[in-house]
Image 1: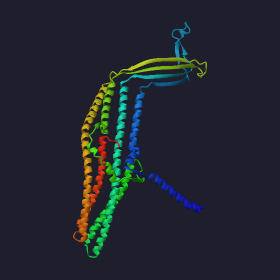
Image 2 (image 1 turned 90 degrees about the horizontal axis):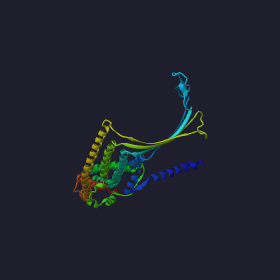
Image 3 (image 1 turned 180 degrees about the horizontal axis):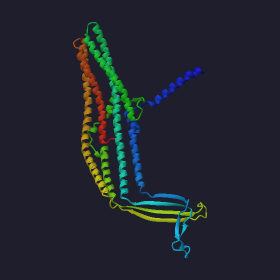
Image 4 (image 1 turned 90 degrees about the vertical axis):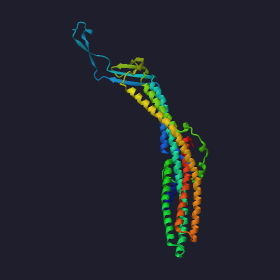
Length: 450
C-alpha cells in the first residue's frame, strides 16, 4: 500500500501542475488582447473607478439641496442642583430687605428629545456646484477614454513587438542553418585546397554574429511576451499564445479610407478634455461670483421635555411638554478683506489660460492629424519598398554565393551581401510593425474606437 502511495502522489502532483498551467495559458488575437487589457489593466480599472467616484460626487452635491433632518435625545441628572438666592420678602413681606433665601429651581432629572429639519432655499454656490460636479464627471469619463486609447495603443505595440521577435528568430534560424551549411562546405573545400583560410574565417565570423544575435533575440522574445502580459493585466510569466502573425495583421491594417478622412475635432479625446477643462474654468469663475450672494436656509424644529426628581420618564403618568418653532436664516456676505475678490481674479485668469489652451489645441490637432496621415501613408509605402529591397538583396546574395562557389567571387563580397540581406529582412518586418503602430495613432487622433 505504501508503494502505491509513493507512485500515486507524484502522479497526482504532476496532473495538478499541468492543470494549473493549462488554466493560466491563453490564446489571443490582437483584438482579443486589446479587449482583455481594457477589462484587466490596472490603469483602466483605476480610471473607471474615478468615473464611479465622479458619479457619486454628483449625487453628493445634489443631496446637499435635499432636506437635512437631525434628531437628538438628552438626559441630565444633577449631582448637586444649582442654588439661586431670592429676596426673603418674596416669601415673607416682613423680612429685612437685605435678606435672601437660597432656592433650588427645577427637578433633579430631566430628559428631552428634539428633531430639526433644515432646507436650503437659495445658494448660488450650490447651483454652480451642481454644474461643476457634472462637468467633473465628464472630465473623468474623458480621462478614462484617454487611458483606454493609450492602453490599446500599448497593446498593439507590445503584440506587434512580440510577433516581430518571433518572425526575426524564424528568419535568423534559417540564416544560421544556411551559414552552417556553407561553413561546412567551405571547410571541406579548404581541406582539399579549393578555398582559402580567410573564406573559412569570414564564415565563422558571420556565424558568430548570427548566434550572438540569436541569443539576444531569444531573451528579447521572453521580455516581449512578459511586457504584453503585463500591459494586458496578466502575470508576466503566464504562458501566452498569439494566434495572429505580422503579415495577417498588416493586411487587416491597410485602410486607405483613413488617408481620405477629414478631422472632426469634437471626436478627438484631447479636444473633449480641453473643452471640458475650459468649461470647468468658467464654472469656477461663476462659483467665486456666487460667494457674493446671500444664502437662505429654512428650518423647522419640534421636541418635548420632561422633568422629574426620579427616573420615571417612561411611566404613563409622566408629563412631556412640547416645543416647536419655524424660522428662516439669511447669511449675507458684506466684507471679508477682499479675499473673495482676489479669488475671483485668480479664477478668471485660470479660465483665460484654459481658453487659450483650448484654442491652441485646435491648431495643434490639425498639425498632428496631417503628420499622422503622412506617417501612416509612408509606413504603407515602406512595406512595399522593404519587400522589394528584400527580394533584390536575396538575388544579390544568391549571385555572390554562386560566384563564390565557382571560384570567381570572394568571401568578403559574400559576407557583405549576406549582411545586406539580413538588414533588408529586418527592415521589412519592422515596416509591417510600423503600419500597425501608425494606424492606431491615426485612429486615436480621429477618435475612432475599435
